[in-house]
Amino acid sequence: MAAQAAPWSTLVDFYELDKSIAAIGHRGSKRVALQFPDRFLPDAIAVKEHLEAGVGGGVRFFILGDTSYGSVHVDEVNAQHIGADLIIHYGAAHVTTTSHTPVQWILCLLYTSDAAD
Image 1 (cartoon, rainbow, N blue to C red):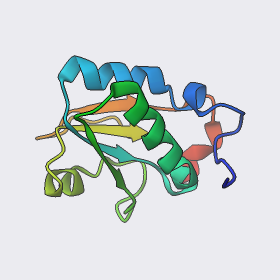
Image 2 (cartoon, rainbow, N blue to C red; image 1 turned 60 degrees about the vertical axis):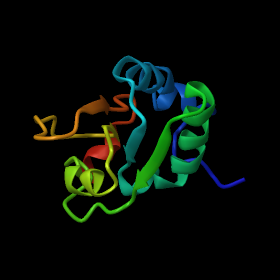
Image 3 (cartoon, rainbow, N blue to C red; image 1 turned 45 degrees about the horizontal axis):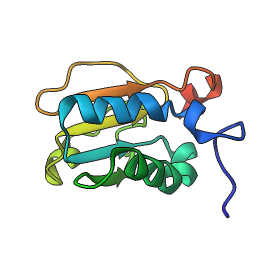
């Protein structure tokens, strides 16, 4: 098993996965883009697997791994390329309005050194 980027034993609390699952259900999302800053990418597969188990079938997840615009900015362009109907953005963020795809912000506030990404 790969080392976790999250600073404690459970990803559920750090990534607020129950909040993510609720957002997916509330919106009825079927194609969800998961965006992580580079330092959290080692956790991406585990987060995706937990979300898949939490929402059941019928939802596809896509991990956005290109942070060329900076990890604090939402990658709405790549989300549109995959037809996402929801972006879940993990980590520090410039919380702004998106033009096409709704965003669920998970700021991981307990991890403060993320702002440097």
